[in-house]
Length: 164
Image 1 (spheres, helix red, strand yellow):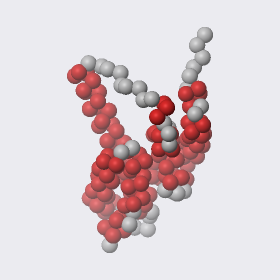
Image 2: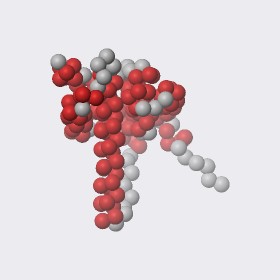
Image 3: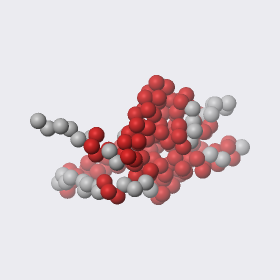
Image 4: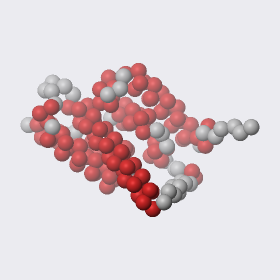
C-alpha cells in the first residue's frame, strides 16, 4: 500500500524536479533519488500527515544536497585547473517562462513552483521547506515581482548599479 501511495505522486514529483533541475536527465535522477530515499525512510512518515508534502520535502533536501555536491566538485576542478570565469549567457535567448524562472533565486523559484505549479498551501510549503509561513509569503511576493520584471524584459535594468 505504501508504494502505491508514493507512485500516485510521481507525476507531480517529475514536474517539480524538471522545474528545479532544468534538464530532464537531472530531473529523472532527482526523482529517482527522492523515491529511493522515500522508500528507505518510509518508516519516518507519520500516517495521517500529508504524503505529498513529505515527498516534496525529501526532494527539496536531495536537490540542495546535490547542488552542494556539484559546487564542491566545481570548486575542486577550478582549483585543480586554474580559476576561470564561467561563460556568460546571452540574455536575448531568454524566450519563455522556463528561462525566466531560471533567473530567479532558488529560494523564490522553489516557493513559486510549489504554490503556483503544485498548488500547495503556504502552510504545506512552510513545512516542506522548513521555513516560517511569513518567509513563504515574502519569497512568493518577491519571486512573483521578479518574474514579472524578467518577463517584461526589464531585468537587466534593475540589476545595474549607478556608478558615480
